[in-house]
Image (cartoon, rainbow, N blue to C red; front, side, top):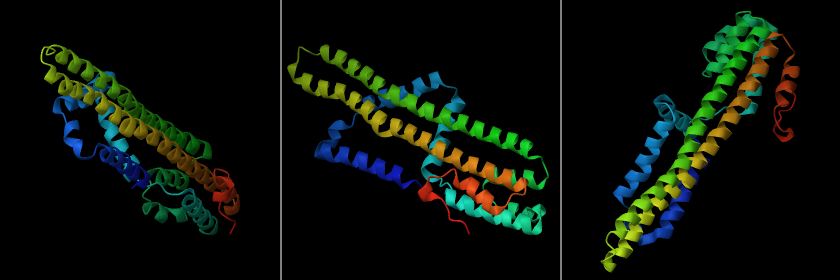
Length: 251
């Protein structure tokens, strides 16, 4: 679970609700919610195919709840794989593959054990990375577009409220409440855009970069093992993906 996302959502909404205080019921308006939330979803469905929009939920779920292996863990794993392969032969990795949960790593090692040429392995695994980036990019784009639609729908709701208010101008007592309701839709749009959609889009892009880095390290490790390189050379290669302070020390 990504604690930063959870803490950020709780902190942002907590501070907003704290500022509202006991007047929270004044900020609850079903028609305004329908305009902003329903309108945002509807506009997004017009803009993208249904599959893209539904797939975003899975991407968001993975962003918040999935935990990537750290680069240090990846390096440690490949050091172990390389030592085993040099000591007992590449086929000794066959039992190890069955215990691996990461499908990308599993595929890479299986291709190596099957005896494919390093260039063929590179082509296959780089294609996997390219399509991963495309999927994540699509997800971040959809959420970002929802962040753009939400405040626009809020403004539409406000205009609707103002038009309705102007129809009752002969009764001054209705102007204040009507104006408040009209502005609530703008509030909903701004909150959804700036506290939900845009931050989530940013987190999706960041997590995509992190996952691509991990997969590029796995690709480099797999290719090095397929070439029979020394474990220490593999360690140095994988360390080059990391900043100096995060690199593992030679064993």
